[in-house]
Image 1 (spheres, helix red, strand yellow):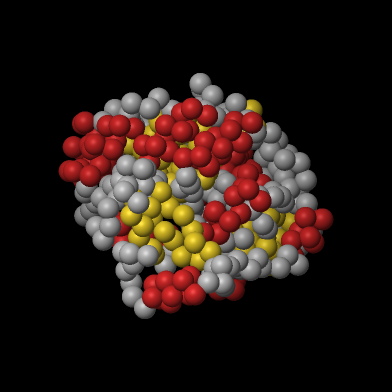
Image 2 (cartoon, helix red, strand yellow):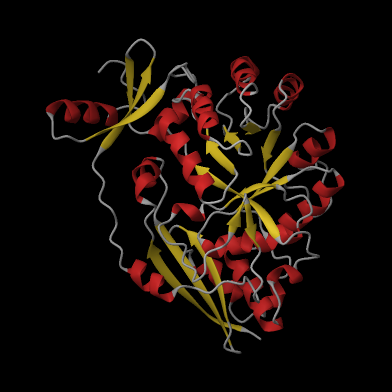
Length: 419
């Protein structure tokens, strides 16, 4: 069996209407690409990535190869998943059987959302719970009062719900992080904190870890390096030292994911799978989750965010667990009608906007975008995680005032302190 051709299918899949504008402001793209790996035996394997198509030089190494050449592959998971789809279809077995021994038939899967207002955060909890999820991963950013958001989510959450806040290092250091984390640990729904401060601050992590009872999760599971090296990887050192309580297997290639499975099993430390895409990627994540020893934290695919998941039969979700597909390969069938529909979806034209960070006392600071606010607030340009702080987007209303502020923001890399 040889891969003879790769059909590249660019799509544009809108996010669900209630979150579409928020996702746009958070710089989430609706561009999407599906790949059909075609073989000389007539089988087709599915892959996909969020965003525009990969360059041809990433596809060429697959052409003319046997899908089994990519067992424990080190290529992009987006493309290697198509090889595992083909392997399973060729043998008539689920893809997990080519990865290892099955550990579970249902994989823990969670909801995902960017940072939102306390009201919108609570509303997302309600939608997630209604659709069968019991875990949610939420971005935490300096322009929202994360404690206020957590309290609102606590009010909306079922008793068996859990929330993990992903700070991406936004708490910066122990001095800033400690009082906020101490407040969060008194809110029962908060069950995990990802990367509260920057991962390179090893001593800071240890100090926080000793002071705060909420589990800390590291972004990264890289426990293997090729060849003899003097310095082991950071996650391996932290795993041995017990500096974190879980870690994200985020878009790792298949070899690294499965290697981490064994290493983290030896350390009795849980893994959170994070592979973002539609129902195709969710199927791949389930196949991985079926064999990875400690993949027990609610995983993230965000496939629920799209108005269509591109597969014929939706993945069953029950009390926070997603059923591992039982069919050959990835176990899902591409919805060709959906593919045809989203080939021609026009790009949404959003109005110009800038971001306004609203702080206590009626103070408003304007930024080009929330991405700029996030970056600069991490650098101490503005007060971060202030009580009652929140962000609003100011859209073009055709006024002279909007034009003046918008133009002034383009002239420098910094906020406007007075409106």
